[in-house]
Length: 566
Image (cartoon, rainbow, N blue to C red; front, side, top):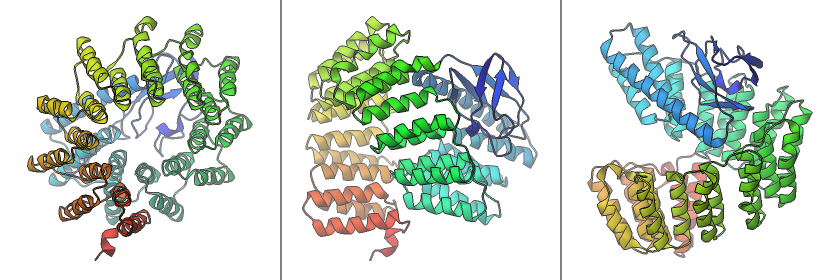
C-alpha cells in the first residue's frame, strides 16, 4: 500500500473532485469513478499509475496499476504501451460500429469514444475523418464531440482548425466548457500564437468561465512556449491572489520556464516557494533546481543538491543525474560529464539507453565527437544495449562534425546488430551526409530507399541535405517530384523548400515560391514570413525584408496578412 496524490489534470470538470487528495491504493485495486478524460501515464513519487477510463455514458471503471520506480525512459515506454492499448480499443470500436445497429444516441457515444482516442493519440486527421463520417451518417455532434475535435487539432498543432471547430460549436448553440477552452489555449501556445493566447484567456474570463488550477497551468505553459516568461509569472501571481494553492507540478513548470529564459535565480526562488506552500518537492523539483544552478554556472551547487537529495527521503533517478550532466556541460565542465555514470551506479541507479544518448548528444554539441564515440562504446560494459535512438543520436553527432566515414561505418554497425533502418534512420542519414557535403551518397541512398519509408518528411530532409551541399537544383527536383506524385503539399513542404533557398540567399526564388504557394491556396504561417525575411536580408534586399517583417507582425497580431495585400 502506497500513498499517492492523485494528479488533478486527470479528471474532467464533473469528476475532478471525486478522487482528489491523498489516497491509499492497494496493488491491483480497482477504483470506480466517472471520468470523461483518458490520460497518459501519470507519475507521482516513486510509483507510476497507468490510467484507463471511459465516458460517463460507458459506466466503466478506472484501473490503477503500480509500476516500477519511474524515469523518463520508463515513462516513455509506459506511454507507448498505453497508446498501443488505445489503438487496439479504437480498432475494436471501429469494427463494432460497422457490425451493430445502434440508437442515434448510442451511435454518437461510440463516435465520441473514437474521437477521444484519436485526440489522445494526436491523430487529428483520423479524428477529422470520423467527424465527417458522423455527418454522413446524420449523427448530430454534441459538446463532447466538438471538445474532442478541438483537442485533436490542438495536439496536432492545427490551431486554425481547432479555432474553426470552436466557432462551429458556438454557432450550434453548444456551450464550450473549461476543457474545450484549455485545449484551444494549448493549441495556440504550441503554435506560438501569442496574441491569440492572450485574447482567448481574456475571453474565458469575460464569458464567466470558472478558472481553476488546470486553466492557469495551461496558460502558464502557453506563455512559456511563446517565450513570455514574465507574463507567466504574472498569471501565477494572479492565480495565488485568487486563492488557489499552486501544485508542485505547476511550480516545477515555472522553474523550467525561468531556467529556459536564463532567469535561474527566479527558478531557485520558485523551488524555495514549494516549501512555503507546505508541500514536499518532488524529484522533478530537484531536477529543476539542478538545471537552474547549471544555467547559472553554479555546478558545485548542482552537485550539492544531488548529494542532499537522499536526506529528503527521495532517491535520485536517472533524470536527476541527467540534469547534473547537463549542468556540467552548461558550465563547460565536459570532463565531469562522463563521471556521472560511476556516481549513479554507486548510488544504485542503473543508467538507461536514454541517459547515454543524452551524454552522446552533450559531447556532440561541444564538438567532442571522439568522446561521444567512447560513451557509445562504453554502453555495453554498463550492461546497456544501444537502441535505434542511440545510433540516430551518434549519426547526428558525426554529421555535425563532418565525419562522413564515421556516419557510413556506424550505419553498417547498426544493421549488423539487426536494427533495421526506419524512415527516421534514413532522415538522420540524409541530414548527416548533407552536413558533410556528401550529396552523391544522399542521392544513392534516396534512390535505394524502400518506397514504404518515403514520406513528406523524408523528401523535405533530402531537400535540406541537397541545399547544404550546394545542390539547389536537385532540391528543386525533389520538390517537383512531390508535386507530380499527387502529394497534397501543405505549409510545411513549402517552408522546407524556402529554407533550402535561404541557405544560399536565393531571395527571388523564395519570393516566387511564396506567390505559387498563394496560388495553390496554401496558407503561410509565421515561419514562412520569418524565412522570407531572413532570406531577403541575406540577399541584401532590405526593402523586401521589411515588407515580410510587417506581414509577419500582422500575423502575430491575429490579422490575416493576405487581406491587406494588393
